Length: 302
Image 1 (spheres, rainbow, N blue to C red):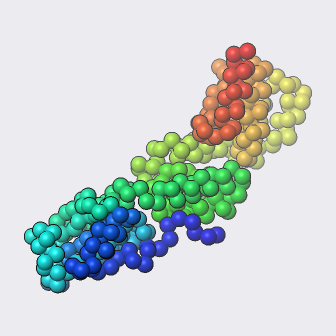
Image 2: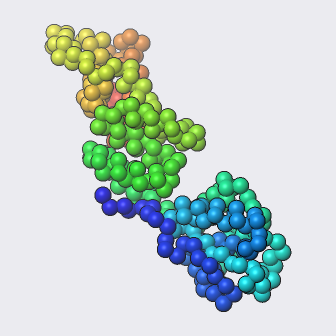
Image 3: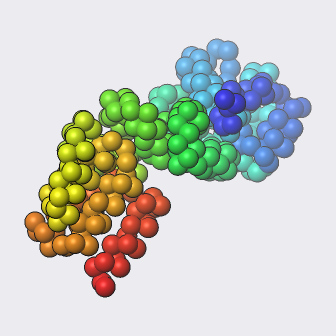
């Protein structure tokens, strides 16, 4: 499908400038997009390490930040005006004014952080990212797993640690029965994303699926038991777990609600406790969670 976010770096994301072009290439350009200015010289050893790192980080930012390079030997008046006393020296401009700077060659990880911080400060790309996340969620809810997977994949290329996209991609893989791949997506999530509520929610769902088995439970036999004895709560809870493992969440919830309606205290409120696990797996904002909480409340407080 068509790429809607990210993409390649803008054609003019990296360029050289001089004293005459500085205002247009830096000051004016920074009114829309943050601009990093790299002051360097051919004889500068550290510059040869820093400049490629800056270029890689700016390319990875995919148009959210620009890089302008100034050869101080060829533009001594500009370097003096900017009070550049040693190189490499890096200035960042946004909306026509300097907003950050550093001197000397930094490790590539710090260069990347510098560029990412500037891109985030500008807020550029946030609307596109939010729109992509919303479209992906709509596709996932509609069962269009191909579209959802493609969108979540694009988002993760732009923002690898996005917890909503990680959780969404895992749910997409679960939707097409690729449980092991979903587990791999979750296992490779960075620490800051692994503890996010949406990621934890999918982890809980996988735990429930493991608890329920491989989805091959004979639901017909359980239904036959219930046909003979509608108060066979053990059979009803087992049926709920089997339905959940098979992807029939609504059916699983309906069985647990019925078990609670018939005997909320059975087996130390086992049906209610199982339903709360379902809520945790689905997430608090899932439509099923919201509607089922209302149904549960009407039973418990009737």
